[in-house]
Length: 104
Image (cartoon, rainbow, N blue to C red; front, side):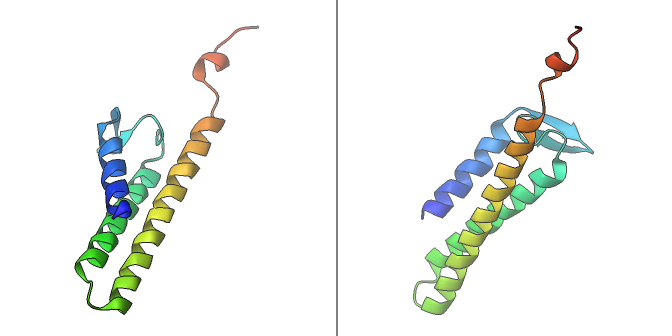
């Protein structure tokens, strides 16, 4: 159940952030600036984790299928979080533009 809440919260949160158009698709400027592919992969893994968790909740009388869906949801959520951490690390290593424009 927590995977469903987490995936819904992350998906909604990133759609409420300020967006810019990159190649015709909206990309959040806060974390995924200049990384539209990473943002789209993040959204796909969030949707896959939601689907796996919901399937695990709906299929309760078949333990093997339920376990597979749960593992699928966990792997997708971990992949989404890894992409988020990767994008955050890249965003953190970029220096602020006002420091680059300073004259000595």
